[in-house]
Picture 1: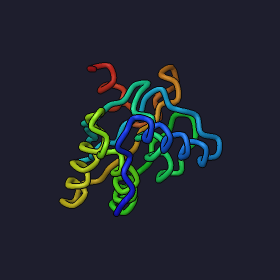
Picture 2: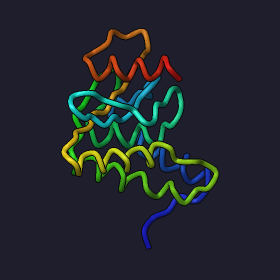
Picture 3: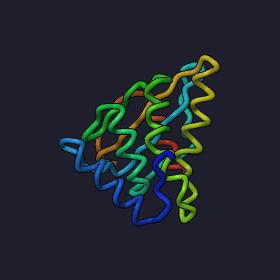
Length: 142
């Protein structure tokens, strides 16, 4: 049987282990995964000072540890992130919006789109590129 994190404590433990395993890890102030169609990114789940299990999973597969950065995410990388986060689904105390968004974006990849992960270390940091700009607009619209 696959690993499942069915309690809030189990999720906190898993998050802690992943954070400890990522050298230099600093939690972002905001992050999200965007689906890109015709060069335009959209972010179905925008996280501000929350969702840190999802953040460390996405950071792990992207090779991110701290600061503000944007990473292209291919299908294999997204599949790995979904697999790593899936055990959290067993916990009914959370809605798991990131996992739902990542699965939606995976469909975008299957139909010729692309994806980007955006991490914002500090919201005062300069905007990195057009995907970061779209992400920050989504933050402002929250």
